Image (cartoon, rainbow, N blue to C red; front, top):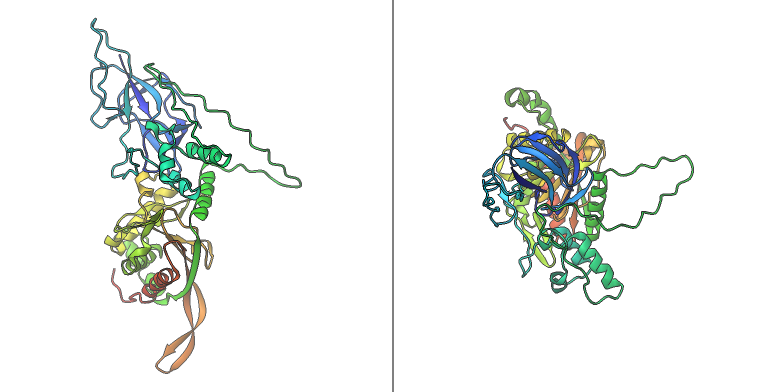
Amino acid sequence: MAQVELVMPKMGESIIEATILKWVKQVGDTVEEDETILEIATDKVDSEVPSPISGTIKEILYKEDDVVEIGKVIAIIETEASASVQASPSVVAETPAAAPAPASNGVPSSNPTPVAIPAVAGVAARTDSKGRFYSPLVRNIATQENVSTIELEQITGTGAQGRVTKHDILSYVQQKKNGGTTIVMQQPTVTATPVQTATTAAPKAAPKPVQASGNVELIEMDRMRKLIADHMVMSKHTSPHVTSFVEADVTDLVNWRNKVKKEFQTKHGEKITFTPIFIEAVTQAIRDFPMINASVEGTTIIKKNDINIGMAAALPSGNLIVPVIKNADHKNLLGLTKSVNDLAGRARANKLKPEDIQGGTFTLTNVGTFGNVMGTPIINQPQVAILAVGAIRKKPAVMETEYGDVIAVRQMMFLSLSYDHRVVDGFLGGSFLRKVADYLEAFDATRTI
């Protein structure tokens, strides 16, 4: 018998830990290769973890609801193969060290072979002079707390492969505020045992109980709501937000959609909403003002050449998630419609994959879906701008004609752009927003499908 270690997989560039939601398989259960063993959740998306090999679950090292760092061993799978047999090609070894050779008496070694689920491809690591990775969250905290690069490199990380975690840098910041001048942190002790068991987390101070009086109901935030809350607060602390507004006459656009929506669905099998039309206008305006499609790190502006549009989608739970349409500027209206419908449908069914919500460079949120006429959205970090589109309503408006000005009933809507005033000034933000409105107002009412 051979034993294989199943480790917590890496789900994206900024992901350093994941929560175990449910063990689908239990100790003693048999499992086939690629069969789901457990369900996990990160601050990005919920995912299923497949088995890298066929065998029997011998040991489970973490319980449901435990938060586990990336790279930690979470279970042991026992297989029929000898320890010297290589795992499936789709499984990537955690370290380059070779598996222990069989004992000289012909009995296979019982030392488990560490196995990791493949990481997401194409993720660019952000490292220091020592080659150590720092997540965007750690870098943001370092910037906010004036922790220099030299100080950051001196912090001993307790994460996987010595990575500095959120807890590490916050501990250092607190020590610095208390007058400490040296970093007193220890590397976690690694024993020579073949299987590394779950460690007991340091006891945390009990949260202060909530006190309320009167006819009230206390509702604890669910995991996703807590993550959203943290992300929104972090965004406000990171970026000085400014919001600009314009009003657009989208009568031609509305009339065109009303005219073609039945034919469009019959011909292409897709319902056409306003969202792909809005995204099309946004991609056109980004080509005109490419500096709005950027992120900022310290004093460096990172202009993105790919236009990947995130679209905020409401989940049945009431929470929000932002799936991303990659290379949206390369898609026509039909392609955008298919992408919007696919991502929205899978978001509602909780079927999004980690890569579906990564790599966004600009975000669109449709507050008009809820009947709101305008909003002041919070930037989806590390992007520098987010556009909110309001409800389209019939309103009296002044129109210029060859016979003079007239008042007519028109389809009007507000657009609002929140942007990071560190790198986007009023000229760029206002001009970009006006350009989006111009493209919507100039929509070709004779356009064919």
